[in-house]
Structures are given as C-alpha cells and as structure tokens.
Image 1 (tube, rainbow, N blue to C red):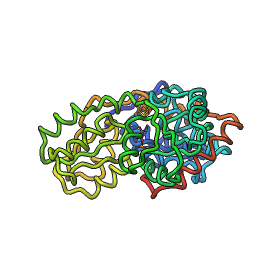
Image 2: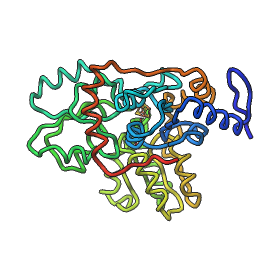
Image 3: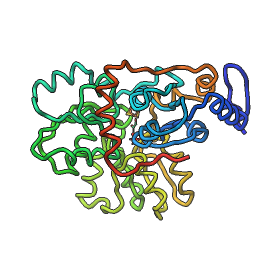
Image 4: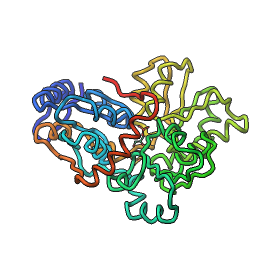
Length: 332
Ligand code: 13P
Ligand code: SF4
C-alpha cells in the first residue's frame, strides 16, 4: 500500500486511516468530506456527500466537533447550522473562486436596485453574503427553492450564472435576475469540449453539473438531436451518484470536478466513468490532504468561527435551504 507522508512520520495508508479514526474518536469528532475531495479523504471520512447532504449532516450529527474536508464556505455553513459545535477546516486557505465573485456590499447594492425582490443565494457564498439573502440553495434543490417562491415575486439569484440559467430554464420562470459569477473549474468544462467528447463517444450517457459552462450546450445537443434526451442528465454531485448506481450504460461522461469519479466508480464497477475534461480539478478542494487532516485532528486546527450577528442572519437563509428538496446523498 502506498505510504502517506506526514510532517511527523511516514505510515501506510491503512495505518494513517486507523490513526485518523482513532484521533477522531478521541476528539469526539465526525469527519465530513465533499465528493470532490481526494480519494483517501473520501474513504476515511465518516460521511461523504454533496453540499446539501453535508449541511444536513452538520445540523444533526451528535459529535461535538466536525472536521470539514471541503472548502471554507462549507465549514462556515456548518458553523452557522451548528453554532455549539467546534468546526475544523484542515486548511483554512481552501477557498472557492465562485464564492469570491460577490461581496456582501455588492449584494446590498443589488438589492437596492430591486426593492422587494427575494434574494436566493447558492450555498457557495461567504457567511457575510448569506446574511444578506432570504434563502440559500444548493445544486440539488435550486429548482425546488425557486418554485417555493410566489410567482409574482422578482428573484435575485446569485452568484453562479450557469446554475442560474439552469434553474430559469427548468422552472420556466422569467422574473429571475442572475449574478454573472462562475466557478473557474466548472466554467472550464465548456460547450466545445463537451461536443467533442460526445461526438467521439456517441453511445455514452452524459452527466452534467449545472455549474458547468457546458450545461446550456448539453441541452442544446439534446435539442438539436445530436444526443438522445434520455442520455443527458443535469445533476448535482449527489444526483450523479444516484444515477450512477442505476445506470446500465457501458460508459458515462462526467462533466464536473474530477474528484467525483472516485465515488461513481465505487458505486458501479460495471460502468466506465470518464471525465469530460480531465483537467477540471479544484485546487482548493485538493488542499485538504492526508497530512493536513491528521494534523487537524491532532492539534484542533483550524477552527472556523462566524460572528454571532452574521450567523443569526445567515441561519434563517440556510435553514430554509435544508428544509427544501428531497434527501440528497451523504453516506458512510
Ligand atoms: P454539489 O455538491 O452541491 O453538487 O456542489 C458542487 C460544488 O461545486 C461544491 O463546491
Ligand atoms: Fe468553488 Fe468551483 Fe472549487 Fe466548487 S469546484 S469549491 S465551486 S472553485
């Protein structure tokens, strides 16, 4: 088994995993990992899942500490939902280019231009931005969140333009204004790349995350008859996992961050899962590694806090989010 090199020592993967679980027990900690984490982190975590599932878990798990193997906004969301718990992020610099596309000040200015509008924020936002919003959503419940808002109310959707365009399309709602932010990883999975891959794999199914630059092109390919409708699905990472378990396709092309492939391959060894763009890697997600997780459990680093006022304002919005939509995926 490949050794895992840590600052303190060198151990096998199995020894490392045993030590991680031992330290977690000692600290009364539960380890949550997002589907984009490194394979060894996903495997050692108590639960691996999509943003919505992990938020729901953060709100309900019994442990007094949560070690969040994900990015900063996810750890902040966990703190907002579980203020009494200690939330650790193994690398506090694990950020998100999408969350960085809008500040609280910009939300205030946007709201001033649209008085009375309902502000819907994708969970990939800072706590300060969430505090300025009415309701949060993730990719797995975004359409349900939009449908929960009375038809006649104007909506400001932020910060992801591609997810915004997707929910506008699936809900048929016209009165949505969309912030033009994007995630650099998903924006890089563009329509041109998708078309090329689909043309070279005409029998493959295609799962597309709605944050992708190619989400519109995927549906255009369906509309133009280039790919049959039943073979293209726009899904959150948790939705991809559920679809992967059921599919009988020989090959599925995956348009999202490449960390997702690990879960999909484990879920269904009879199907080949391939990235649409194999360079679509989120370096923020990959900042959490074996060494940092071990140190986080050993030394209690790095604790994430959210000030009480911001937290109270953001909590209303985040709690609305976790109460909407069907259960999403976060398993042992
Ligand atoms: P989901 O897990 O909600 O699909 O989110 C994807 C993502 O980009 C998280 O950063
Ligand atoms: Fe943010 Fe994109 Fe990385 Fe997700 S994949 S954490 S949206 S930068």
